[in-house]
Image: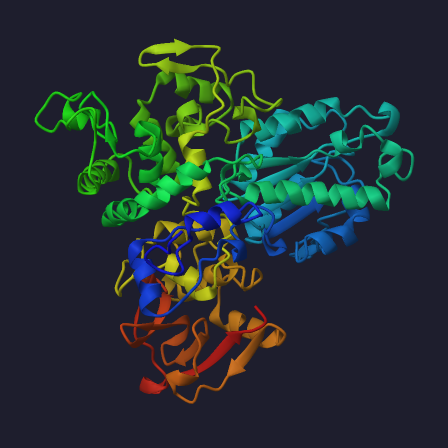
Amino acid sequence: MKILKRVFIVLVSALISVAAPLSTCALTESQLDFYAQNNILFYDPSATNCAPGTISGGKVTIIGDSISVGAESEYNSQIPNADLASKTYNGTTYNLIQVSKHFAANAEGNYSGMTIAEELQDQGELRPYVVFALGTNDPGAVTESSIEALINLVGTNHKVVLTTNYAVDNQLDYSVNNAAIRAAATKYVGTVAVADWASAVASDPGKYIGDGYVHPNATGSKLFVQLVKKALDSLAGGSNGVSTGNNRNYAGATVWSEPEMAAIEANQAIYEEAASKYNFPWQVMAVLHSHETGLRRYNPDNGQGVYQLYSYTDGGKNANRFAPASEISEEEFRRQTLIAAEIVSGMVGDLNNPDNVKKLFFSYNGRSGIYIQKARDMGFSEEQAQNGEGSAYVMNRYDAQRDPTSSEMSPLWPGRYTYDGVYDPTSTSTGFGAFVQYEALAGSSYCSSAGGTIVETAILLSWEGHGHAKDDPKPEYVQAMQEVGTYVTPCNSSGCAPKGASCDIFVSTVMRYSGADPDFPEYGPGRQEAHMQEHPEMYTKVDVNDDVANLEPGDIFVVNSPEGRHIYLYIGEIDGQPSQASASFNGRTGEHYAGITFSDYGMKYSVYRRINY
């Protein structure tokens, strides 16, 4: 198999051979060009942290009862750096994990999980992933409404792991709790995951329960935290945590056959040319080609061409129609692909957003109201329903509830159009939905733990060029801030900065989202510099002597000037010029451009380098 275009683009063959599930981050053509020009070689999917299973504990808050108290050492071992420490605000101490803690308010004077979550949220210290390991002390009281209150409290920027409860010999009845908790994972797809402790221990409770009642022994605590970590990891992969990128679906089934992969390789350069012209992932074109004409360079007999462009050709009847029933040349295939890419680019918005990719596939297939209602019935939000979550064409075999080969398939999933205008309410298919195929090719460009280098992440989250408006952050930057908990509005004596338009917010987002330092302070250049000084095991101060030759991409500048402090990232060279990625308080959003300043204009600066990373 030949190398395509650049040595650091993921080869199709690599997608087959990667062993662990992951969701790599697709990049635009201009970004790839930047890396090529600056000799930055990366994009090894086996090395990214964009995968389920690699979520950093620095993004996790744990709130729990005595089960979690007993499992504290396991939390520290399996989910290091997760926040389970007590907090004191205004003289009041809140214990994140505590014996006899309740899910919601109670009369015992023990601050409930809801109280603590609300306080952490108000203080800006609730991390993006929240483990709510409660309910042991509330048999029958954890209901769908109490879980809904929790979800409303933490907001859409957080994801939640809930744990089921178990008592030996039914000494406590947790059936109401567990039913509500399990239902929440279906109702809040991609937002809630369940660590199903009750199911895991039911077959052999003596192996895991230590006090003959409810508390795990050492083996049980280990299993309990393993289940929590597995649930966290499932959320870390994007909508319901099942995005892959290694030619596998959520269950490990091979999505694309070897002949199909070979055909994709043969067509990839043309897919890339067309998609890059309109700045969206080339995998979109590969999936549409597969669904419409089986990856062949062939015009069907209806005159609608390789991509079945019905409206463009008026059903194959107007002057745009394609010659029917014939194999086509490479140049003709290229022409049709460029036409289809232009049409696709204007259909639903930014196709670097995976939700829009789903919506595109759904729209391309006809947006049936039956599928929209099916998604609603299955518990998806209205927005998710409109994106095609209920369409077999889009989402078949994406997760267990929508997988006809799984024993856990939802009874609501059967029903699909088997021919144009013919709907069979009992029909299912073993084929993979378009979005499953897309992610199996590593198509998703938004991911819940970016995991690239500092430089890669800084460029991914910033606009190219200087002078972008403060209220126009790149969508990837917004997504990253929401994921890592930096989507705040910092204020100081000069006012307030919206939507990440602040140098400190930008750098902290890059450091957290890349995985370089999940605990990097979210704002305040002074606090951030103090953090780097306090962690010599992670950072070293670099004496660059006003010479760019002594810098390394990813170095962090902290500048003191008459106007105040500033922090930014050195990212190497653009067009032979030393360059930075930065934002400015209440002035401009994240961007990367040529130009760095040493000690001109009365500025003093320090440079720090992340080591052992």
